[in-house]
Image 1 (cartoon, rainbow, N blue to C red):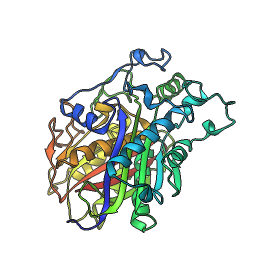
Image 2 (cartoon, helix red, strand yellow):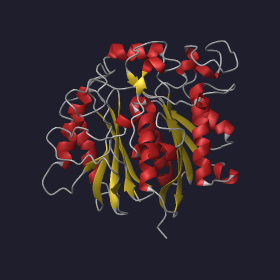
Image 3 (tube, rainbow, N blue to C red):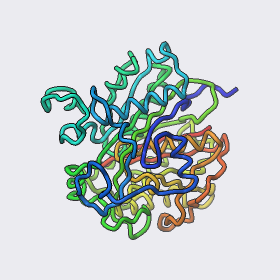
Image 4 (cartoon, rainbow, N blue to C red):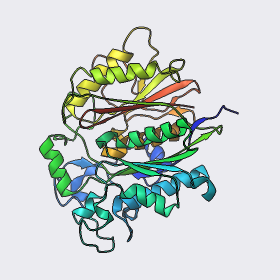
Length: 389
C-alpha cells in the first residue's frame, strides 16, 4: 500500500470530446478533433461563423431553473467526481470547494441562457461570479468553505492548486476543484476578436509558425482530491508566479516560465523524480507559442536531461479559458490511472529549437515519473502542478 498523499480519486466533466471523462479519453485515443465551425453553435449568434470551436452537444449540462448555465454544469461535474471517489455524505461535510472560472455565468447577464427562473437582471445570484462554487456547496450539502478563483485561463489549475495546498496544510482531508467556462456567445467572441486572441486561420497547432490565435471552447471539469493511501494519480506540488509585464502581452524570452519550471524541478517532492512529460498551456496565440517554446527549450533542452514528451490538449478540446487547466488535468489523469500518458493529435509542430517527442499514441508512465502541467492567465499569471502515481 502506498504512503498517504494527495490523491485524485474522482473525475467528472464534459467538453467537445464527450459527456464524461472516460468518453473524452476514448475519443483522444481514436483520435478525433471535434472542433467545428461556430455557425453550428446554438448560442454563437452567427458571430465568426467559420471559426473552429468546441462545445458540449448535450445542452442539458447547462439546463436548470435554479442557477445559471455554468453553475448547473459545475454541479453536475462535481457530482460525477464525488460519485467516482465514493465519498459519503459524512465525508463531504467538511470538504472544501474551489471553483475556477474566467467568465462565470456571463450568459445569464447577456440573456443567452433562458432556462433559469426569471429574475430582474443584476438583482440576484446571476450577477455573482462566485455562483458556481456556491451552487456546488448547496446542491451537494457541503458545509466546508467554498471559494471562486477568476484568474483568466489559469483559473482551473489555480483552483486545483488551492485544493492541494489546503489538504497539504492539514486544514481538510477532502477537497473539490472545479473549472467551468462557456465563452461561445456573441458579446464575448467580439471582445476576444478585438483583443486579437482569436484564430484567424483555424490552425490548431500551438507551436506552428502559422498559429494565429485560440480556437475557443466550452468545458467543465471536476477533480476530487483526498489525503489517502489509495492508488491513483497524486498531486506532488503546486507553484505559481507572475510576469509583472503586461495586461495582455508576455515576454518573448519566457523568463518567468523558466523560473517557475526551474523552481518546480528543485521542489523537494519533485527533485528526486524523473520529469518525463509536460502538458503545456499551448494557448494557440503566436506570442505565447514563442514564449513557451523558449522556456521549454531553455529548461529541458539542455544536455543531460531525460527525454521529454509534450502532451497538448487544446488541439483536441479547443481553448476553454478558465476551465482548460483543470480539464487538461482530468484528461491526463484518465490516462495516468492506466499507467499511460495521453496521446497527441498527429502532425503537431515541436517547439522551435527542440527535439521533444509529440507522441500520437499513449506512452507508458512509470510510478516514479512526473508530469508537469502548465497554465497561463492573461495579465501574466503562471501556474504549474506536478503529477505522479
